[in-house]
Amino acid sequence: MKNRRDILVIDDEPVITRAVSRICAEEGLSVDAADSGSAALDRLDARSYRLVLCDIMMTDLDGFAFLKEAARRAPKMPVVMTTGYATLENAVRSLTDGAADFIAKPFTADELLAVVRRALRARRLQEEASASGPRESLAFVPCPPKYYRLGNVSWVKEEREGTALIGLSDLFLKTIDGVAALELSPLNDEAAQGAPCATVTSAAGDRHAVACPVGGRIVAVNEAAKADPASLEKDPYFEGWLYRVVPTDLQGDLKSLVSCSSDRL
Image (cartoon, rainbow, N blue to C red):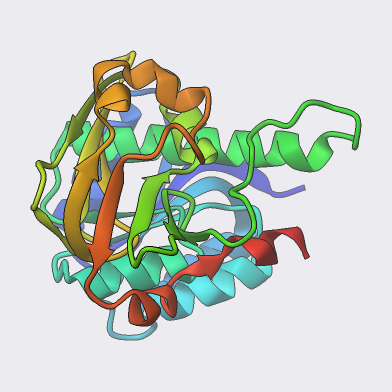
């Protein structure tokens, strides 16, 4: 059996790998570092990891190519993508291609640890769901058919009136480990696909930015959820919606999302 470590950080900037190693070590997490995608693949052959933090912009093998190969070699291992070129396209592509999360550089220690904790919890929940028999209670509830999701973070549901509802996935909420506060954008604000449109604070005090699944103008805010954030965990796909929006280009945005119907195939 391969030796197991907690985190593999991949970045060609030594200042980044040193910072991540120091921050995570203070949390009791073991960290290995690689300065290229090919070196990281060699690490995967020698060891198993609970989580990988991978830079997108690398010369020999970019982050998206590494993500694809990592999914083949270690399909249950979550990968968090990082980049100093924080475009919305990079964020959306990362989540759609299967990354556990996306974090822009430079990031603070608190931002890094919030992402790391959530990704590690997501892996544990997904492993529990895979191990559960058909009669066991679900570790998390997948989003319903006819919904679309941006990674395992947020979802969108098209409505008949030309509007769409936006909310948070049950897996995202369970990885936060208790919702203490919810910050929402105001009415008539313009949301953009992949951009943060809400912030959730956990019971432990971690702040988690929520990437919006589609772009559009916010025409309704769920005031009940805002007043009682813990209620989101009770019914995240129906009463626990966050926004109603008039989409800017819904059909175009849906092409970058994952159909929740495919989760049941």
